[in-house]
Image 1 (spheres, rainbow, N blue to C red):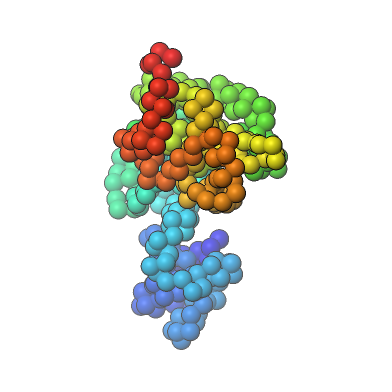
Image 2: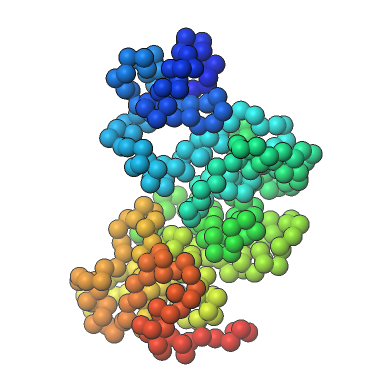
Length: 352
């Protein structure tokens, strides 16, 4: 997998520590202590025997033409490397359970600008802290554990719940919605968000919340009140972390009347499926989250063009929100209330 090689294999092939060191950041990267990955077939004579360990040609092709700086800026690549490190680490103890951000990486849960490197685990009897692994003495209920091959980790739901404490409510809300969306989509073979959503999709999501999320909250030893409140608020329609953050901002402002993933039509037919629509205020929120291109294709509403003009002709006001706009509640509030002041009238009371 990804040309993963252990130091013992290099030694058995007669490749010295000196050669390994010289190959680092050339044709080889270090994943963790004693574990490496071959990323290129280079022309350095001393490295020729390393090329014999290439099994994953696609992994080699991916690195062609990319500089270390390119790879460092590639968020998806860095996340993939972290998952590879977690899976390749060889000094786990029996009963270790991978938790927190490390478990999130294994599940593919998006994390915003996370630079943590150490693997985080829980163990029923041991504490330890090294550069590569942080082990905390604590037990994880069996119901909240899943397997990744020989490794145990917290379930996707429990991982997202744990992120409330670790990363804060904004990050955790996006994670909870992502997990719910994935779990719901699994029940609809061939699901394609570009084809729209059915009532069954929403009802299945509510069933999953009741049968899987609520029991996981009940098993938490602390933070149940906040976790329950957040789980009560999540939905399956956010197509990117940015949309989840936008949705949480609307909830925090108690700004009522917005619905997600609504199709808008005129006399000519379909115009667009918009991220958020408040029909009473005739306002559309278009969230330009960069993740959206990867998840559902280039379907964002443009500031100019036929779609935008047709929406304007129907009397809609379109507010374009960048990822930065939804990160901070004050920035979000100022932007939407400045562009559409009448939205202030749609703020409900706390009891609504």
